[in-house]
Image (cartoon, rainbow, N blue to C red; front, side, top):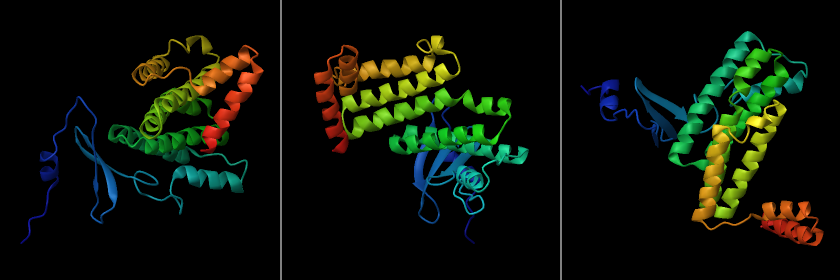
Length: 244
């Protein structure tokens, strides 16, 4: 009689290391790609597409898609307490997969999952009047933006150049600044730990890849100094690069 594989066998072949994120990309029984994360009490398995638990929501791939459809059909739609719990579950699932993608260096997939989370945060503000509940999500927006910016920059570094990576960090920092401004906390922006870490990464990339001012930084400076002919040339160059 063939011996059934026990969970003990799987865990004993993959020790948990508390000092790092234990993640691997492997194959499911049917050959599909799955992510596995070793945690202290076992193994979490996440799907690589759609919702990480692989469970469709009324024929929708994710709860975000389901809610978007609800709002399209009923603009005044408001979530119930049970639906709030489902939203929180999806937030947590996409957080786990986002950090896995970062660990595996699948940067564009990390960006996609961060964007999903940000869209879900935006939608929550539209479908719930519970400020306290919305606040529990909004407090993590800078953290999600940090991950998104980090992943976008490292992805640009892999595929394009150090200058593109620096520009991605600049864009991310500007988005974070708008968040601080929205919540009347702009005086804390420069000293925020996540902002400091992104700024340090940007300057590290500048030094390592000998990146001076990016085109957009030069364009901003030219406009501020009223050098409009130079600004027009830089704008044309930016357009050309974006088209290519």
